[in-house]
Image (cartoon, rainbow, N blue to C red; front, side, top):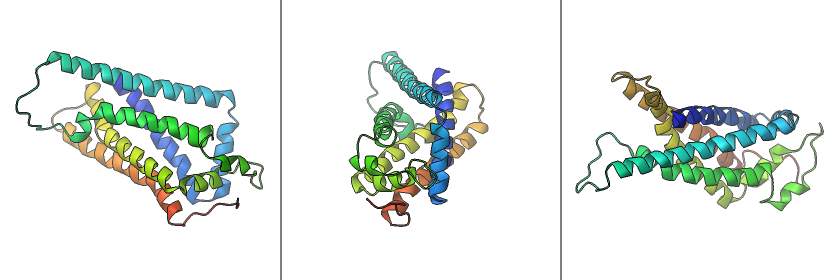
Length: 216
């Protein structure tokens, strides 16, 4: 139940965060204005960030506890294990969750605290006086290693979501034999739509389709 509830909270955040980030395709004014609206929340914004980070930690911690309990329930491994319904994503939820946590911490250091790229401190405010998030994202993703790490992290997030976005219905007891396959299929579609949406940003930047609003 705890895994399901925290999972729902995190899925809603993933969707909202994507909708905000996709504004980079509309132009600097949009995403810089969006960022400024968030910054205007002041201490509330940091409370939300802390709440989400604690939610991630609780989600992963309880998932690990469940995995340990499952292992203790059958200490002797199967001699010949054949998976009938368990997918790769469902069998590696703990691993993908831990790597996604590391990805989130790096993401916060990269774009929120801005300590990983000294060029971010050189960016001036845009014509409206807002911090130039648009150019920051462009310069940040122009690094092939950074973009590659983001794509890898997002791929693992998609694997995690492909199972988690449908399995929480089962945890809440809101499924049946007919509904379960549809939820699983819908979960996979949702996960890979999130992957395409998020990765479209670094890919577009690396292809030169999005250029910084100011030169450093």
